[in-house]
Length: 396
Ligand code: BEZ
Image 1 (cartoon, rainbow, N blue to C red):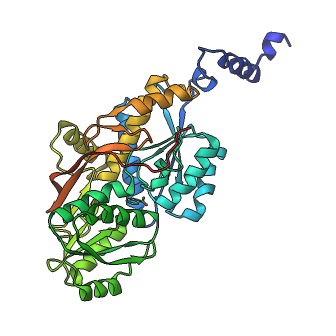
Image 2: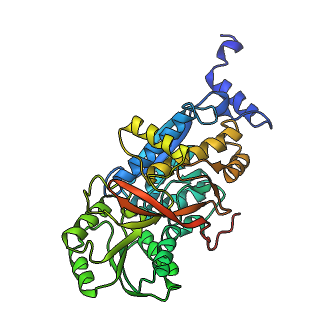
Image 3: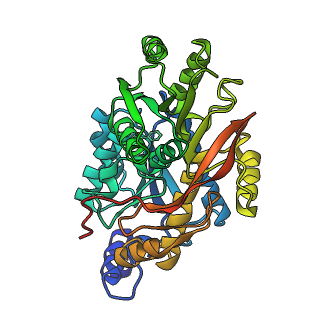
């Protein structure tokens, strides 16, 4: 057998790998036309299952609109159902990073699960885009160059609602939410905005995640007789809460307010139970821009579903990654340039154009919305270009 005949696949790989190390030459994976490996770590079961599906759909729609490729490379998906279970989060993230060797990890919804992802991506340096979980530390004390968020910081969505109620002179509020990072930070943000108006928080009520045993809490609220109730619930839990609120006879008696997660993606499931509920969020169904109209049409056509805020956040994660990979022509090994391009990207989103803050969280308009029929109708802008002040972020 001649030397030439023995120069097989392994030798070719070695030579290409050596070449890839030479400045200016593309990485090995790129040279071989390899697919880009995308890890999706999202909830596909449990109370947040619908949110995980909407994010996945939104992301894939953005890829389809980029011609089915990212930086010229076809995507290969690796999917893990994280079940919104924080105790499994580091193991699940490790499956994608260590076993599947993904180039980018997209996830997740639940703030507690996000903390596990952050541990793994900080250790491994794998590029990470968070399309929902609002936990403050992700873009605060635990921020890092490879960690980006296309959604919100929890309190960024609720501070505006507090301010709206303060401006309206609402004098007494009870808060109610799940007892975990997202619920606690949402209530903190609301209280920050509300405090300036001189109103009183009568009581902060909590139940464990993902419990939907609301009955005794609704009885307590009825006896406290606040002027308004502020809640954070999302997904299946939000739908159940809205129906229970109506069944308890509180609808129309006490004003119900929340961050927009209370009414997004649930209006078909709750009949008229959400009618008139006001919320603040960085998206609203009826935003009157050509971009939003086209997005809603394409999403509905492709998935036979109406999009919601979660679909928008997934879509924007796709746009952000596409912008980064375009700048490096698909070469993920050019980390610095990839990150710089993502930091600079202006995202033409269905929510309105937005840019990253220096801690990698969207600077975005926060809308005031009201449920009218099957729509989260935008009634105004509660706060323009809100930049959540990240505490403790030192990008190193
Ligand atoms: C969170 O856990 O961060 C979260 C979950 C659902 C909606 C909004 C925030």
